[in-house]
Length: 228
Image 1 (spheres, rainbow, N blue to C red):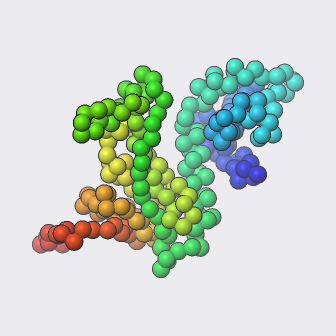
Image 2 (cartoon, rainbow, N blue to C red; image 1 turned 60 degrees about the vertical axis):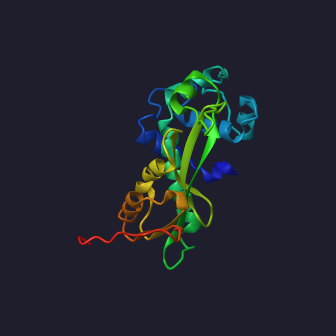
């Protein structure tokens, strides 16, 4: 069923955009590797053989030779993460438009921005890249922590775009990276923790008729400028 929602044409487009399409014949072409990575993400508790069966794939080349599962990590390394990111962009734009284009408020598409943190596997690479969070008592988190901020459709809860990285950066910083993803004729709801003049004005000017809404404390004061 999921294969119908993810056409091969989108995978090929993502590979072309990132110059990762298979030029010479391989036992594991790039298209199959992308499908395997998607399947591994969906069935994280299953073996590769079970994922292949679930997705109705076959690890056999045109000569009938079986591809060893040990070849998959090498194929994933050749592919890199770029095609998966491009595929995410393609699917999110298509699915959000399909689910929400007719469900608007005063002609505006509705979105929200929110963030979270999640633990990463304990290894040297994650520790150096994502870092750790320390509380007021200077106790460091046990696992490396990644911080994430997402632009989500308010109606269908489809993710339009997401930014994540080291926990040393705040959610407002990651929210700024989402500015280019907000469509025209939209209203984005922010939590009060995102209240930042620079973020709000940049969001408002990112696209035609793009608005924002956030709760404010009663003690909030605004400064008038003679330049406006």
